[in-house]
Length: 495
Image: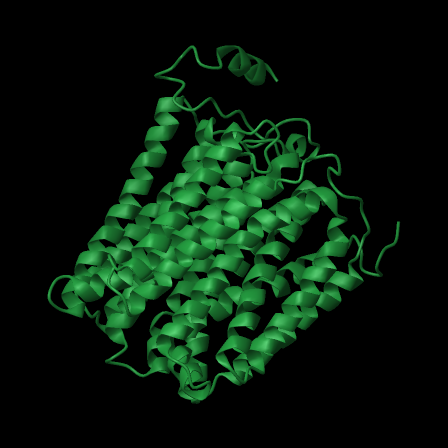
C-alpha cells in the first residue's frame, strides 16, 4: 500500500481536515460586507452576487451526497487529492476573477469540494484512530465548522474596511493549497468501500435538481416577491425534490443514504431535528441583526460586535470534548438550544441592538450553535454502527445546509416586507427564530420520551471496533407503538 511520509499521523491528518474545511465556510460567512465591493469591481448586480452565493451553497449541499457515492466505488484517498486540486482551482478562480461568471464558477467549486472533503475526511479521522483521538476530532470539527463561520463576519469586516476583497480570497486559496499538500503527505491508499453497490443516479439527480432549484429560488428573493414565479416555483419544486429524495432513499432496498435506519430510530431523529432547527434559527438571527445594524456601524465595527460568537464556539468545542464519552453528551444539544433561544431574545430586546446587547447576544448564540449541531451529529452517529458514520454525516450536513443557507434569505425577505419597516420586520422574524430554537428543543425531548430513549454513556471502543452502535437507540415512537420492532429491540438491547 502506497503511503505518504505523514500517513497515519493524527496531527497532520487533523491539520489537513482543518485547512480543507475552513476556507469556504469562513469565506461564506465573511461575504456580507464584501459583496457590494465585489459587485462593483466585477461590474455586476447584487442579485447576481446573491445567485452566486446560492449556487455555491447548493453545490455544498449536493456534494454531501456525491461524496458518499464516490466513496463506494472509487479509492477514497485518491479522490480526496482530486477534491483538493479542485478546491485550489476554485479558490484561485474566485480570487483572480475578472468577470461574474469566473467568480461564480470558482465559488461553486469551493462549495462543492468543501463538502466532498468534509464527508470524505471527517469520518476516517473519527474512526481511523484510537478512541482517545475521537474526542479531539469532535473538538476540531466544532472549531472548523462553527468557529470558522463565527469568525467570518469579523474577517469580512476587516477586509471591507480596507475597501478590498482579493487579499482575503488569495489567503483562502493559500489555505486550500496547504490542504492539498497535506492530503498528499498523509496519503494512504485504500480500496473503494463497496464496489458492488449500485450507482444511485436517481438519488444524485434528485439531490442536484432539488438543491439547485431551491437555492436558486431563495437567492431570487433579493429582488423578487415571495410569490413571484421566478421565486416560488423553483423554491417549492426544489423542496419537493429533496422530500422525494428522502422518501426514495427510505424505500430503496439498497439505499445510498441510511435514511430508513436513521428515521426509524429515536435518538438519530432527535439529533437531526435539533441540528435543523438550530441551524435555521442561528444563521437567520445573525444575518437579520447584522442587516439591521449595517446602517449604524462600519463593516469592521460591526464584525467586531459578533466576535463573541467565536468565543462561544470555542467554549462549546472544549465542553464537547469534556463530555464526549459521558452520558451528559445527550444533554449538551438541549442546553445549546436554550442558550440559542436566549441569545435571540437578547437581540430582540432592542432592534437594532445596542453594542452591549449585540455582544451579549452574539456570545450566547455562539454557545448555542456550537453546543447543538456538532454534538447532535455525534449523538446521531453513535446510534448506528461506525460503518455508517459517513452516511450519517452526509444526511445531517445535507439537511443542515438546506436549513441554514436557504432559510436565511427567506427570513431576510420576510423582515424586509412585513411590519412596515425593516426594524419591525426583523423583530417579528427574531421571535420566529426564538420559536424555532425552543420548538426544536421540545420536539427533541418529545422524541426521546415517546421512544423510551435515555441518556447513556457511549461505548466508544465497541463503536470503533465496528461491533455495534455506541449505545442502544429504541425504535421511533416505541412507547406509543410498543409492538413495533419489538423483537429487534430485545435483540439489540441484549447486544
